[in-house]
Length: 389
Ligand SMILES: *Cc1c(COP(=O)(O)O)cnc(C)c1O
Image (cartoon, rainbow, N blue to C red; front, side, top):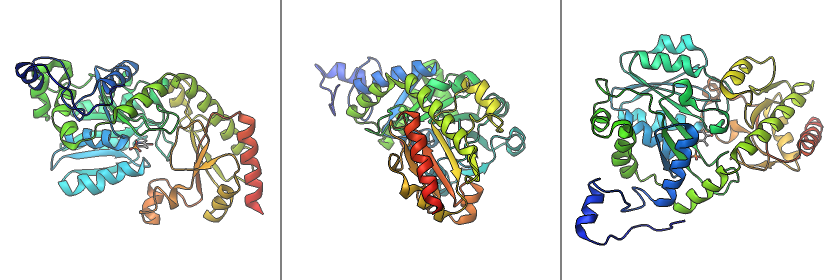
């Protein structure tokens, strides 16, 4: 673990060589750091990508990618019902800089196909929408994007490389909030950008990246991002956080299996109850996205589910009656975490905006943990009973 801000060099010529990219080495942790490079190598390998840049958070990964790719006048087609911070980045930060984002039902290929215009540069989806829980058809979206020289960027936070390598389905760039399942223990924030190597940059609309790709071949995009957006926005991780996230990676496959198994059991229990009006978990048999879970994610749907309790009053009563699950804004930890999205993550949106993002006032989101499943089910059952009282 190299907890260092800067790196000393033995002579001036060698230092100039590192700065100018003629020799490998580190100069300053905002550009690169050995511990973070170790994390980047592991993530690139797990994703089957050509390389990775680790960032200080999932939002830093998204802002670095989007500010690197997009210019005033460009357009992005984005899934709706995705992470609230991402929507705000697109609308409130990129919007005033002249980048237009359209929030659409990206699980419907025809909707996206019909929305593509000559200004479309990016199609953005989450592998499983958080919290809409919809599952887009990645290879169809990759075809639509590539037919118009646009880039398919996929946020795989809810699935992780344990469930899917989006690059195998045609995605060009994969982003993660490693804060969630990849770290897995709620001990550090982090993010990652993986280049799957699918995108053909030459002779397209991405001039600056094409110039880097000409010189650096498959490392072109990441070299471009590292040289500008990553370095200049300052979204580098603390080395200690990279170390924590590397440790989390050791058990990722094991944990994702148990998270997915436990979430499916909880979803089944909730869907059988008459006092639970609706349950949304794409791993549940007979639900609209179950087939895509089977083909794209090998049958596992991860640890996050949502369900409704009729109104906000009962949702709050349920949350307050839980004894094991913790009320917290994170997902992907060992412990089961619950939240009422409408009054927290999405509180700044008007009720009709929330509805269009799939966030109802009665919605509870559960990040199902690794506790013995009986404990999780008992806790939820007693809180459901208490919420009726
Ligand atoms: C949490 C989350 C993010 C943002 O990640 P941070 O590490 O909190 O910055 C982005 N996308 C998804 C799907 C998330 O769940």
